[in-house]
Image: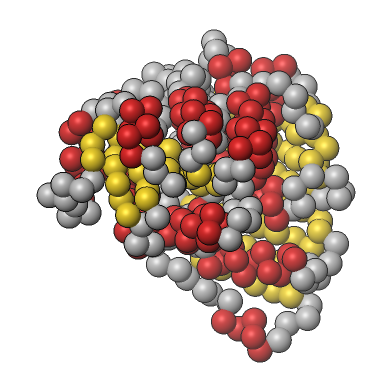
Length: 357
């Protein structure tokens, strides 16, 4: 399958690794900075592969290469623009999180992809973590009984160097803050596990230490799910001196699970009323990862390839991407208005937060 990558920055290496692992034909890479393309290809020993074309204009690349699958790993503010162009051209997509920066653009991506018969996957790769897959099976088989509450805690560190190396980070137009960038994977998992359907969100965000940014460095929220369960969200880039944890808790009448590690990749607690010997393998499970992004990109790519070949929805589809975005934007809107926000969220964008801090 002919593959191309748009955007060759920090996260792109995970996409390239996943493409290689899935034996995709890497036809082209695209970035406005030629040196970024060369750095990325060199990381994967592909710098001398002349069959991989280099482009600075993604539209020209799509026209000339006609790839079957593209991943978009640019700054977040142009995800939607690129996605809509590619979908119009019939190209299947993997879009890095967040899928878009506004509900309007997310809805456009979903609608157009359905009209064009194009597969779109939001890159929430942590859904493929071994620990998360085990938890999902427990949720789907009803082992928790009635869900009581759940929470996600993303306690990370991002210093000034992280932002100066890519000045678009921490801006409302191109990135958003800690919740949109660092915490959206965990938010995706919480919403997915707790039943997806949300009634209302109340949130508060602050900019405590990163006064050189536009956006927040800490955010908290309470989420009321339609099934009666409650969720809490805590996300920050203020933890001293380095990343501490990304931890997901799910509590039900017959079960308690805590997924920990740096990127929800370990099972710290696994207790169920109907426990069997098979559960022993999950107690203390640790999935080794080489970085905070985990191992999920390769599995996500494999799923999207299969979805294209068998004409089915990807496991993490565009609606999943919209759902995670909707939670973040609802927290932002709650901060801006000082009121709780009823879902579904009709119309809000990250740039509506301009001047908040």
